[in-house]
Image 1 (cartoon, helix red, strand yellow):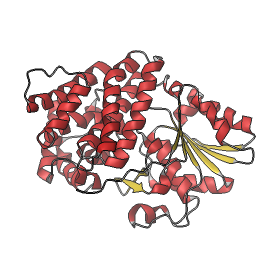
Image 2: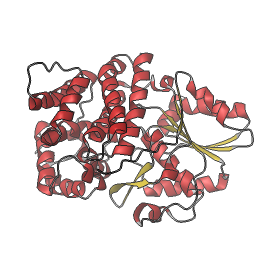
Image 3: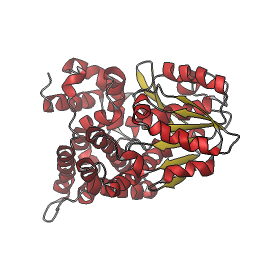
Image 4: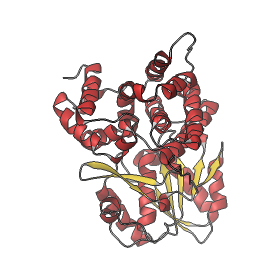
Length: 386
């Protein structure tokens, strides 16, 4: 039996009003580099963070040009800006994109080689990162508790993995998520659900990741629809924030699978948001994987509230797909795939890219290019795309 690994050193500060704990972490002599995106700047969330930083007496500089699916060019541009400020601490406010960029910037700030060496050439980081604080504003990526930063380069969404990329602190405040629109609430929630499901059925799952994944699935099944029905339902937001964090830890420690492997080319070539691509892919990939882990898919159905009396094992497993479909319809996590310009002409490219992603090795059912192509064509058929 293979030995399992579990290591998660991030200090989590969680709860309603947790944002104020930033005052306990920062010192007056700190120089804080705040990484965020234009939307959060416009909504005034960045102002809230800067106001707390100001209370500590620390200096602050903001980089707010982060976009979905950040590229290596964006990271290098941000690093040029960072060097002129010489920060002692980096804070990321936002979803997965600001968090991933902030993580890699914190590591690059203390290590001399270019990004491509760490991303493509297998060079390990020699030095610890600058202290990095993640403040998520969505309940989806779980990046606040992972050792990976995902950056697009060479038309590939390629992760950089290292223990130095773990945030030193994660400040998880459900109040920051109450203003998230329904569609983003739904698709980022599906991202968290996908993390939990893929970690749960993956080949590298273990008792620690299973316990996190099961609780994440249960909470999402109970609370995502409530968060979408009423964005100000603070208890639902709290449940989703916990679920996202648990699912993030589960997938970081247990791995992912075909959904994320196929999501990478969809995001890289068609600029789909990560939660959108997962929403498009999850049902059909679950169907493909059912035969590999029917007992775990049956458990997923149970966790999502399905009535399973009188069903055999495979029928119970199939109910998990039905439950996910129902959740998508109820919450509004149905993506307009046609607007991204995807067609059957892209099937070979998507299949080849999927099957060369490292994550596919953890998928519970071994796949060929032909398998991946057929899954993708089935998805296109669902959307009436030729």
